[in-house]
Image (cartoon, rainbow, N blue to C red):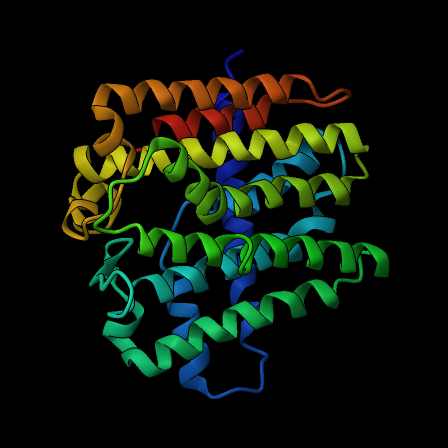
Length: 297
């Protein structure tokens, strides 16, 4: 299956649509201009838009209208962007560059950067709650799932465990558990949200969840590899920052070859779960799996 051309067209089209909508979702807010400017600065700084595109890819595969998913897709990108703003702060990873541009706190100061992250996180749920395309029950279900994935049991908890693991030698199993929460949960919930909006059955949503977990681990392993083999131009931030922060990574635990083999295992498992979903056009999602494995940044 040569899914690359169709996926690339879908990716380009959806990124353009999403990025045109971001200012429309934030500019009407009755909040200080500097806050909206800071929020939009990081939101518009580029990025792969993997999470919203995962959701929209599920709707496409199920033959459902994409319009029903755009606000939830945007909400997922707002949550992801808030997490990056906070990750870059001096108290966290202390990064000067993000996506090739100065990090938010370098431009607006730490105080505004923290509040911009807070604003993006809270406004994300406002977007879902006011989506006229979704039923009240579906809105509640989506918000519950996303808060689980992004909160203390998911991404936030994974980030804490990642920080606590710095300077310690973790096992591959311990590192995998951290990254399930830190990266995998938000990727999984992006797929699951698409499945719920599309009205997929429980079994198909189970396969979407498994697909997301393997995709999340593949995504993190690829990030670890890029931190060693990539360039500043490709990844948009200094290379070698993980080693500098004494972080546990897949290459440090498994070696480069071992990490690359692990990447292939998770990509293949993701594809196997994709193929198990019935009445589904997998072309775009298959292309997205390939893209995550081959990306340069």
